[in-house]
Length: 254
Length: 187
Image (tube, rainbow over all chains, first blue to last red; front, side, top):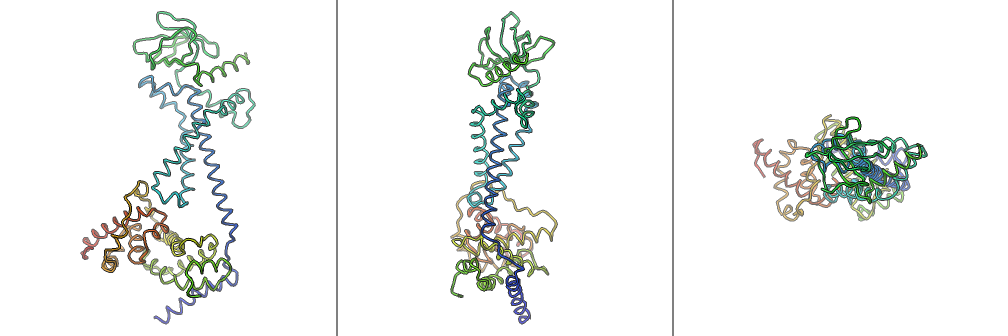
């Protein structure tokens, strides 16, 4: 038995050496590993850029359509927020970060530490960079180009998500104050009567005056909106700047 | 030539010396066969699996960093091959993911573990090993039977040293329970 084992052992080792000598088993070149590493790095870079881009676009879409105002309008606002939130974009970001994590977890600097640090680190990096990108004029520029039909590939994406305003929401400028509420003119030039009731939420409790830009949520019946939430939009707010942009575009079209 | 350490031999292999690879195979074949038999049980194709490990080691030798430990690198290849063999054999998903890898763990106490008489534990492991989950079984094999340190196990399994400590502790506790259940003397 021992004799057989020794014989087998010799044969197994010799068989591999024989395969190496005959060229059946070949050593991969160093450049192959370098290339593979470069491909992984490239994939990591592409995935990071994709995740940051989609997340910054999500921030832009939320800002453009006034989603951030909804949770301040109480439970109704929160329900509308959850129902109309662009979940697909968020899922895309999670998918990119997850794939990114699968790629980088092979590196020792990742697995040597608790994975929660790496996962949290990746998410924080993407969120922070996405936030910074959102602060740049990138998406605003693309949105403008999309509205002017000058953005061939991403155009439908910007137009589609750019117009996905929350259900029963209306942005516009206050033109008159009356005893029931106020009159509003939308960026498209449509007039609405906004009715204020005791149930109407005013998240920052500010007085509405003529000329103020507001975001209103409520039940629309013809030209009347029974508001359950009114939020004054500050002149420095990007939401307002974007709506001015939309308004300019609409005026140009008219 | 036999005086050269594994990493020096691996460097010679990288430069085209196939005889040095023969020496490395001679050093590691018995160890890997023992590891494989304990890890996946007696299988007809166990020698084929180990041959495949050596073939993969040879083809990928240029990716090996000679500043690191050759044994950890080779055991990593063996670990991957054996896990694949287990997947084929059992056809059931192997739950290798461990929540412990997610959260920070207290610093591993290797010294304390080494103080426990390995020989004494070894005898218990031989009896209870087959009844244990794969991830705990492998931990006991690598630490008690292959006598590898935390750092080496960490590099083979791609988990942090603190997780090695926690998993090893859990493995011992589970083994204790299993040994009692199967009427063996506990550790």
